[in-house]
Amino acid sequence: GAVVSQHPSRVICKSGTSVKIECRSLDFQATTMFWYRQFPKQSLMLMATSNEGSKATYEQGVEKDKFLINHASLTLSTLTVTSAHPEDSSFYICSVGGRTTDTQYFGPGTRLTVL
Amino acid sequence: AQTVTQSQPEMSVQEAETVTLSCTYDTSESDYYLFWYKQPPSRQMILVIRQEAYKQQNATENRFSVNFQKAAKSFSLKISDSQLGDAAMYFCAYRSGNFGNEKLTFGTGTRLTIIP
Image (cartoon, rainbow over the protein chains, first blue to last red):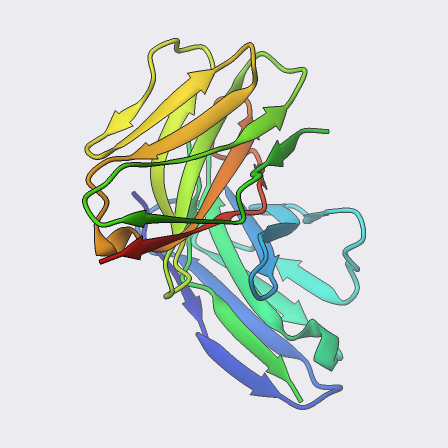
């Protein structure tokens, strides 16, 4: 399967600042990337789907102006949490997929803590 | 909208024994895939097994097998000869269509504990 990396693995920031999380597909041309959020002891909740070169499609209830997603290339997508607040603290996971695969491949996740 | 239900928040099994995790789903579609993912303490999501809806034969991967009952919309995971490394959260997931560019819908998960 595809190898997916995320950077950083952990980040702590102050309330009101912005944080950028990178998701890289190391050996697969990811036409589609997904961003999930996972609270402790809960399931993965899809935040948005991004197709390379297009605007992301956000799930209902996800603020597109707060969670900015950029998918400028087949190997890189970024999630920027703008004006972060403590309630944005969570585990963020990306995954990659495409029409040449029948499944998604997941990154290792990023733990965001907002103080 | 599709829904996935895992009714067992926690399960435990003795090492070397067999355990079955339950999953039901609701859909009106005919083409879809079902998956079981494992999330160990590292939180890396790992694909355990997948099942295409059009295939009647149940998928197997070494010690892992599924019981896919399409009419009943049931998709259970059987783990044989349980090992300590099987301890993890297990998520059942549904996907429309045939390609990896479609989104996944996850169940709430089952935490599996292996008793030495």
